[in-house]
Image (cartoon, rainbow, N blue to C red; front, side):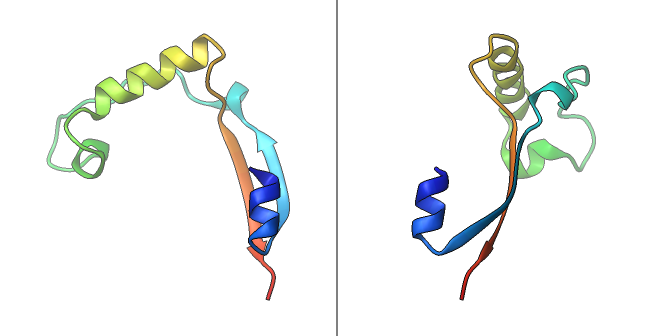
Length: 71
């Protein structure tokens, strides 16, 4: 992934694995007129549950990357 970004003209500024600091306690719901489900779809809670399971099984990582376009 990094090589692809660099070939596309980006310079990596920071890269970190934040998997250990992800909030794994709160549960998303479809309550209220506004929420993540509004943008991400009605199956948002199910997809979040699948992601949480994948985190717990070390099959998914939360990676934060900051890059800038080189002109």
